[in-house]
Image (cartoon, rainbow, N blue to C red; front, side, top):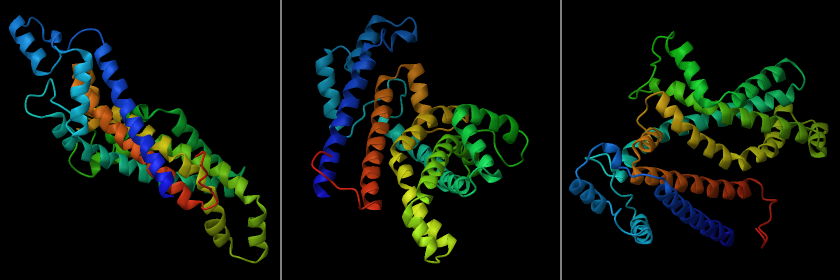
Amino acid sequence: MAKYIFKRLLMAIVTIWVVITITFILMHSVPGNPFRKEGKMPAVIYENLQKKYGLDKPYTEQYKIYLGKIIKGDLGDSMKSRVETVNEMVRRGFPVSATIGVQALLIALIFGPLLGVIAALYQNRFPDYIAMVIAIIGISVPSFIMGTLFIQFIARNVPGIPIGGWGTFSHTILPSIALASMPMATMARLMRSSMLEVLNQDYIKTAQSKGLKKSTVIIKHAVRNAILPVVSALGTIVSNLVVGSFVIEKIFGIPGLGYFFVTSISNRDYPLIMGTTIFYAVILVTMLLIVDIAYIMIDPRIKLIKEV
């Protein structure tokens, strides 16, 4: 187990380094300059800004300096904000994004597998059709359109549900549900197909023939084994939640990291773009590492062979 974790950890570090490198190259490959957008700027001021942010140095030297800062945990200074560094903006925005993301993940984890189990137990009957219609809507309708529909038809008509902003629990309800719609639907479909396969296994029929309660057979034997495909897909699901939060935060006016990221692109704020991208990459890689380890702990039958 320790050897496997070490390999995965090493792969995670390499992945983060690749993300840092690619992000740096892409940012410096974009034509133009972030300070040219300011309009007519005196040459002296322009040169001073170039020196302050190290943009006057060769790309290789800029890369070495930036990599050194990243290793120390310094994401640099924002080119647009005069009062906050990128680290301070991340510290301010991440708790907001984490609140929405964790709530969305909990909604998906609770209702996704539940819908899948209900659909499998009532295959080709009314509950199955209802569950799969919900799943198809969740997969087909992007989260940002779902969020817009929630604002139009729920927030405008239901008292106590704010249209946007941040501050109370009520502000998190619609964004969390909109963000959870696609991962919940994905889990429901995975759980349904996995449950149908598991319910036809011999050990389930053996457990039933022994006179065990139906609830015991379903929960202890069927669900426990059918949940494995959902666990293995959690890495992808979490990444979808992260990407989806960018637009959701913008739509609902939530001051999280996704909002900062979208704004930084329009402002061409290189340090903020790279800082938020790297921060999100670390979160995603960490989640994938946790999922890999959790998958092995849930299913002891998986062998950690050399090729893994």
